[in-house]
Amino acid sequence: MIRIGQGYDVHELVPGRPLIVGGVNLPFDRGLKGHSDADVLLHAITDALIGALGRGDIGHAFPDSNPELAGLASTKILAAIYEEMRKAGYRVGNLDATILAERPKMAPHLPEMKKRIAGLLHMEVKDVNLKATTTEKLGFVGREEGMAAQAVVLLVKE
Image (cartoon, rainbow, N blue to C red):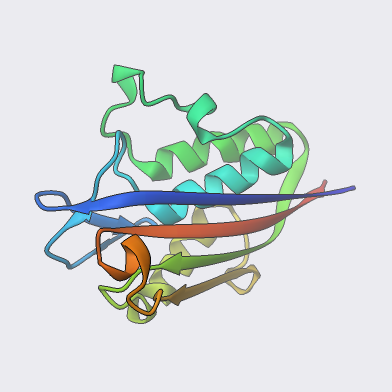
C-alpha cells in the first residue's frame, strides 16, 4: 500500500536569526522567524509526512503555544514524525520539494540539503529531489520578506 502527502510552509525573514534551510545553516544577513528554528523546507517535508499518515498537520503535532518547544531544531521535529511513520509500518519511497526564495541562491546548497534530508529520513539521496525557484520579484517572496517551501512524499508500506 502507498500513501501520498503534501506539505507547504512559509516563514518571514528577519534580522538576528540564523538562516537554516533543509537542515543546513546558510550564510545570509537574515534568518527565518518562528517558534522553532523555522526551517521552512523541513517543515514542509514534515507536514507532507504527517499528511500522508492522515494525522493532521505540524501545528497540531508541535503547537507553537507550547513553550517547551521554543527554539526546537526542525531536524528533531522531522525525526519524531519519521519515528511515527516507521511505527506505522511505512518508509519514504521518494520525496520532491521546492524552495521559494529570491535570495540567497539555493542551488549551491541543494546537494548538502539532499544529503541531510536523506540521512534524516534513512533513504537514498537519489530518492530526494530538491528544486529552488524565485517568484520573479512578485509577492512576499519576491520582496524578500519571507521564504516558502512545498513538498510531496510517497510512503510505501513495509
